[in-house]
Amino acid sequence: MITFRGFPRHFLPWALGGALALLAICFVPTLMQHETVVQIRVANSGTNLPDGFYLYQQLSAQGVRIKSITPSGDALVIHFENEEQSLAAQKVLKRLLPQGFVVAAGPQASQQYPDASRPIFS
Image (cartoon, rainbow, N blue to C red; front, side, top):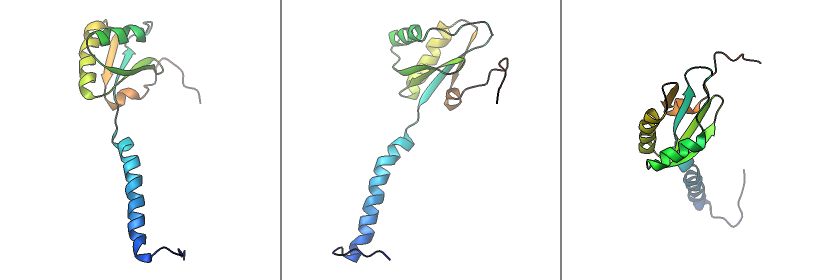
């Protein structure tokens, strides 16, 4: 058993509780944080993805705040601060983009979807 010289035993539960509280304060915000994403994919092969900078300009002009736009395989993933910004962006993107694009929202949008026409190598 570990003995602590000069440390009263009755303070040990309080010290452990304080250490656990500090750990909780450090890790809970990262666990509670969830990102809102919208993914833009091409519906038909042969169509190119829209330019990310163009989308950023158009969404910003409509008052939509964007955290980032990143390419992810054959898609563009747009990250937002909150759900309201994501919903506003979906409305703008559906008006802005032609018929050949799919706009998906939610946690499944940040995952990559395999392309059926692309071979899978292991």
